[in-house]
Image 1 (tube, one colour):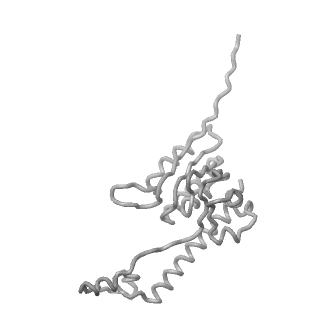
Image 2 (cartoon, rainbow, N blue to C red):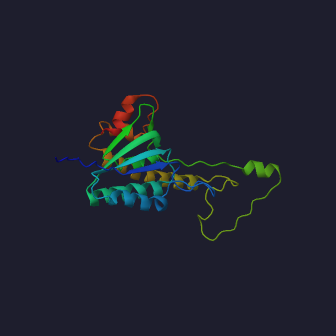
Image 3 (tube, rainbow, N blue to C red):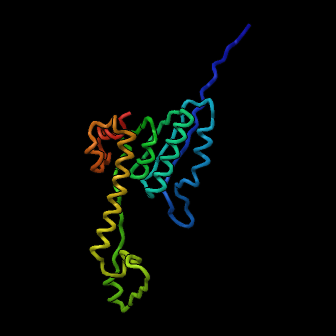
Amino acid sequence: MFSFFKKKKIIPHIRLTGVIGSVGKFKQGIDFNGQEEIIKKAFAIKKSPAVAISINSPGGSPVQSHLIYSFIRRLAKKEKKKVIVFAEDVAASGGYLIACAGDEIYANSSSIIGSIGVIYSSFGFKDLIQKIGVQRRVYTAGKNKSTLDPFMEEKKEDIDRLKNIQLDLHKDFINVVETSRGSKLKNLRRAKDGLLKDYHQKVILIICQI
């Protein structure tokens, strides 16, 4: 008597959870250095037809997001493997950029998806330090060495420079989305406007378009 057993397919799984980039001295965020070997091992399993990635991240560093995204796409192409992404609670901003590495993206109807944009925020303490009698002394070599100092008056040229940097980063983000989902998105204008899924399944279908 002979018995035949079908070989089970093994699908390696990578979990990316948390803020992308440096989040503090005692808490580790998601970064390329910490994920490189894990991603390599997942794609190194020869008999697996695909790699699964679960993402639960509100975003963070655009550089780290892009490094992880590019590395996943490069290995997927090299090893000829499909990438399937599962968005959990949130895959927004840099989290969504990484999700774009997937050939298919799956999301729950309550998942927060998208937020294609760039943000910078800070505080201004100029009036506060004046009120308590503190003087700010800054000495630099180089015109733009002290930019958007929270203890000094904002300068229009500094704000304009920051906006230009943000626009470049935003354009790069849009290019990633268009490259990844462009042929599947029905309305790229909505994606460019920073689409954020927070209440309706239709938005998931537009952003994911598997």
